Image (cartoon, rainbow, N blue to C red; front, side, top):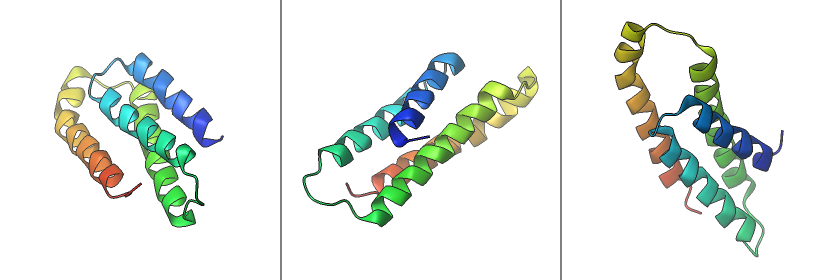
Length: 98
């Protein structure tokens, strides 16, 4: 799957999960992707790899949310972990230096 296809899949999963906390991460990933596409000079391979890894990890988190059927109690207990993961994604996006 290409980066644009992966971002499209993430967008669809954000709609399916219907969790407002996912949308800002998706929006930032899409923004970084648009910045990369707009570059007139060659993009460092390490930057593309780092960005791709963040995108794939976020897709994995969303896939787990869609596929994992958990109880309400488990969901509440996991909410702190999910918030931490979202913070981690924002931190990784900040570190990309596009």
